[in-house]
Image (cartoon, rainbow, N blue to C red; front, side):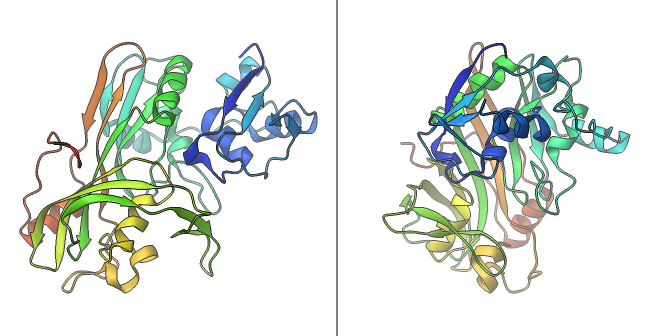
Length: 331
């Protein structure tokens, strides 16, 4: 990057620390380098000086100074240690999960349990393994959106800086259609519709969580459709988020009284089914994504259900429909 640029904070980035915002948009900019840019006032938020821990809000404008080539290439940030090499076993396992690849876009089927980015007590994450997904490209793949650590499924990566910009704008501008599959405990009434419940982050005894909020919360909307039921015990649903709030689908389904199976964070003991392990994995899977290609056309890619969800569906007698069907809310 050879000139000063500005970027607006998107709605789904509300409350994000500024250093995490930079990690999302400029994953190869090291923390040490960012701190120097902040100390010298080269990075500004709405024209004012800021610190790495300051929180950003939708609509605010971040001033991004020219970044040295090394910040975009080696990710060392000028004085940080280079990333450790990816082990052969990790590289092979990750490469086996690629479900789409072209010159600009890479899509993987992220396994449940793998965090997308690092954090407190999280040393193994996808961001640290991305060198394994270079293939024949000069540039390291870039993250353009996220999935929760315990959510599996379709995750889109950009293979070039150009693609990263276009894809980030597509996700920010809601040009991307996302379809999630879930097994829930109980059956919602009605069997399909739209959930409009604002959300806000709150502190708790076991860390930060998201809760339904009043007028001070951020708008959050989800379309849902029940596709199969097991009496009144459980259901298989497709979910389509119209906004991108943290833990949105999990909180919305719990608010209906039908938490996602295995989601003890928001469903507590009610997220278990009699006869199943009470600590079963989260049954939420990013099934399909449809988005504009950075150059031309459309990328439409789906990921098969993970083994734990497929086994649960078989145990319950559910025959999951194909991902190629309509999205919730489609006529």
